[in-house]
Image (cartoon, rainbow, N blue to C red):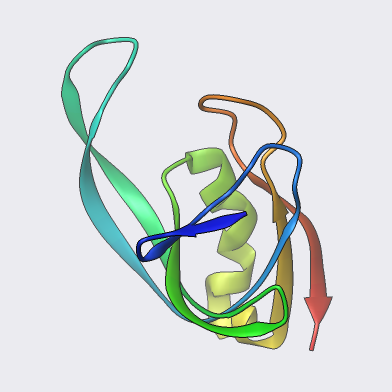
Length: 105
Protein backbone atom coordinates (compact mmCIF):
# COMPACT_ATOMS: atom_id res chain seq x y z
CA UNK A 1 0.00 0.00 0.00
CA UNK A 2 1.16 3.47 -0.72
CA UNK A 3 -0.23 6.92 -0.20
CA UNK A 4 0.28 8.62 -3.55
CA UNK A 5 -0.03 12.37 -3.16
CA UNK A 6 -3.44 12.50 -1.47
CA UNK A 7 -4.97 9.06 -2.06
CA UNK A 8 -4.47 5.43 -1.06
CA UNK A 9 -3.19 3.18 -3.86
CA UNK A 10 -3.57 -0.56 -3.31
CA UNK A 11 -0.76 -2.92 -4.26
CA UNK A 12 -1.65 -6.38 -5.57
CA UNK A 13 -1.92 -8.99 -2.82
CA UNK A 14 -1.18 -6.62 0.09
CA UNK A 15 -4.10 -6.09 2.49
CA UNK A 16 -4.62 -2.54 3.72
CA UNK A 17 -6.48 -1.65 6.93
CA UNK A 18 -8.43 1.62 6.88
CA UNK A 19 -11.03 3.49 8.92
CA UNK A 20 -13.23 6.18 7.40
CA UNK A 21 -15.17 9.12 8.83
CA UNK A 22 -16.98 10.44 5.72
CA UNK A 23 -17.91 9.42 2.22
CA UNK A 24 -19.23 11.09 -0.91
CA UNK A 25 -20.29 10.14 -4.41
CA UNK A 26 -18.40 11.95 -7.15
CA UNK A 27 -18.50 11.97 -10.95
CA UNK A 28 -15.11 11.53 -12.61
CA UNK A 29 -13.84 11.44 -16.15
CA UNK A 30 -11.76 8.31 -16.84
CA UNK A 31 -10.11 6.94 -19.95
CA UNK A 32 -11.56 3.57 -20.90
CA UNK A 33 -8.51 1.50 -21.94
CA UNK A 34 -10.57 -0.89 -24.09
CA UNK A 35 -12.61 1.72 -25.91
CA UNK A 36 -9.97 4.46 -26.05
CA UNK A 37 -12.22 7.35 -25.02
CA UNK A 38 -13.13 9.12 -21.81
CA UNK A 39 -16.36 8.50 -19.98
CA UNK A 40 -18.00 9.73 -16.81
CA UNK A 41 -18.16 7.24 -13.94
CA UNK A 42 -19.72 7.39 -10.49
CA UNK A 43 -17.02 7.10 -7.84
CA UNK A 44 -17.41 6.28 -4.13
CA UNK A 45 -14.83 8.31 -2.18
CA UNK A 46 -14.02 7.74 1.49
CA UNK A 47 -12.10 10.11 3.76
CA UNK A 48 -9.46 7.92 5.46
CA UNK A 49 -8.72 8.86 9.08
CA UNK A 50 -6.73 5.76 10.00
CA UNK A 51 -4.36 3.80 7.77
CA UNK A 52 -2.61 0.70 9.09
CA UNK A 53 -3.31 1.80 12.66
CA UNK A 54 -1.87 5.29 12.20
CA UNK A 55 -3.73 8.61 11.93
CA UNK A 56 -4.32 9.64 8.32
CA UNK A 57 -5.90 12.41 6.27
CA UNK A 58 -6.29 11.08 2.74
CA UNK A 59 -8.91 9.50 0.47
CA UNK A 60 -9.71 6.04 -0.87
CA UNK A 61 -11.75 5.94 -4.10
CA UNK A 62 -13.73 3.11 -5.67
CA UNK A 63 -14.61 3.33 -9.35
CA UNK A 64 -15.62 -0.33 -9.64
CA UNK A 65 -19.36 -0.91 -9.28
CA UNK A 66 -18.59 -4.37 -7.89
CA UNK A 67 -16.43 -2.86 -5.12
CA UNK A 68 -18.98 -0.10 -4.46
CA UNK A 69 -21.70 -2.72 -3.95
CA UNK A 70 -19.59 -4.42 -1.26
CA UNK A 71 -19.49 -1.15 0.69
CA UNK A 72 -23.12 -0.10 0.13
CA UNK A 73 -24.55 -2.00 3.16
CA UNK A 74 -22.10 -0.07 5.37
CA UNK A 75 -23.24 3.27 3.95
CA UNK A 76 -26.81 2.80 5.19
CA UNK A 77 -27.17 4.59 8.51
CA UNK A 78 -23.43 5.41 8.39
CA UNK A 79 -22.56 1.89 9.61
CA UNK A 80 -19.07 2.32 8.11
CA UNK A 81 -18.25 4.60 11.06
CA UNK A 82 -18.36 1.56 13.36
CA UNK A 83 -15.92 -0.57 11.34
CA UNK A 84 -12.30 -0.88 10.37
CA UNK A 85 -11.95 -2.32 6.85
CA UNK A 86 -9.24 -4.59 5.50
CA UNK A 87 -9.24 -4.20 1.71
CA UNK A 88 -7.22 -6.14 -0.85
CA UNK A 89 -6.60 -5.95 -4.59
CA UNK A 90 -6.00 -9.46 -5.87
CA UNK A 91 -4.97 -8.92 -9.47
CA UNK A 92 -3.49 -6.45 -11.94
CA UNK A 93 -5.39 -3.98 -14.08
CA UNK A 94 -9.06 -3.46 -13.52
CA UNK A 95 -9.57 -6.20 -10.95
CA UNK A 96 -11.88 -4.69 -8.31
CA UNK A 97 -10.60 -4.48 -4.76
CA UNK A 98 -12.66 -6.33 -2.19
CA UNK A 99 -13.34 -6.20 1.52
CA UNK A 100 -11.34 -8.98 3.17
CA UNK A 101 -12.56 -8.15 6.64
CA UNK A 102 -14.84 -5.62 8.32
CA UNK A 103 -13.95 -5.45 12.01
CA UNK A 104 -16.40 -3.82 14.40
CA UNK A 105 -14.81 -1.12 16.56
